[in-house]
Length: 400
Image (cartoon, rainbow, N blue to C red):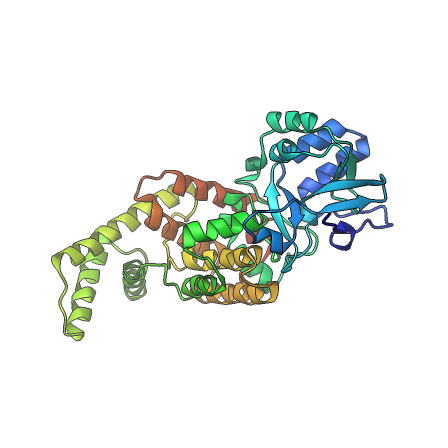
C-alpha cells in the first residue's frame, strides 16, 4: 500500500487564532467548517479544483496507479486525500499531483473502509466516512471549477505580491484571469501533472524539457509576433515622432509601402504586389481593432498600440509556470525567466495599460480575424477585471 504523509508537505495549523487562508477556496472551507456547515463545505469542494498525489514513477508508467493513502491519527483510519490548490506543496520531482473534480473522485471511489481526508494538517482540514453518493450529489448541483474562469485569483501565502517576480507574473495575468488560474503562483501545479503535459503538447508541441526550453526562448525573443505586425507599428511610431500626435491611416499606408520597397531594394530584392497589399490590409485591421479598443476602454481616446510583443512576453510568463507544473523545469529557473519577462516588458512599454493593449492586439491578430468573438471578448472581460479590482497586479504593483 502506497503511503504518504501530507503533514510533511502542506501548510501546518498555526497556534495563533489568526490564520491567513492561501486562497479564497481555503477561506470558504475554513468558514464553513467553523460554522459546522458541512453541506456548505462540500458545496465549496464541488466548485474547486481538487488534487490527488501519486508517485512520479506510477504517473509516468503505462498504467496509472492508485493515489497515495494516508493514515490519519485524527480519525485513526486510512484515508484517501484530496488537496485544494492553495495548500499544495511546492512542485518537486516526486510526488506529482493529478487534477480531479469532486464528481470524478466520487465515481472512482472503490473502498468502503477508507475515509476521505480534505486538506489534512491545515486549519480547514476535515475527515469524512465513505459516502460517494452524497459527494456526487453535491458535485452534480455545483457549477464545477469552471466557475473560477474569468476571475482574479491570488495566492496570499507563499507567493510574491510585490517586486520584480510579481511584476513578471503580472505580465501573464490576462491569460491567468481568463483561465481562472492563480496569477502570482510561481510554483504552480496548474491543472495537474497530466493536463499540464497534455496541454503543452497539444498547443505548443512541447513534450520534454528541450522543446519547453525552445518554446520559452522563442517567446522571450518575440518570435511568435509576426514581423509585419511590428514593422507597421514601428512605421507609425516613427511618423508620430516626426509629426507629433495622431497619424493619418492613409499616410501610414503610404509610408509603410515606401519603407517596404526601400528595404527590399537595399537587399537587392523586390516586393510583390501581394506583399504590399498585405501590409496595407494589416494597417486597416490594426486601425479597426484600435477603434474597438478605445470604445471598450482598452485604449484611451487618443491611445494607440506601441508594440504587439506583449503577446509573446505575457505567454512567456505563463510558459515558465507551465514548465514547472509539467516538471520540465524547477522554480528557480522559471523565476529567472519571469524576471526576464519583466525586464523586456519594461523596456518596450511604459505602463500596464500599454502592455495590455499590445497583448490583446497580438492575440486578436493571431486568432480573432476581426470577428470580435471569444478570442476578443474573453480578453476584454479579463482586462476589465484587472483594471478595476484593488488586488490586481495592475493596481497594486508599480510598472516602473
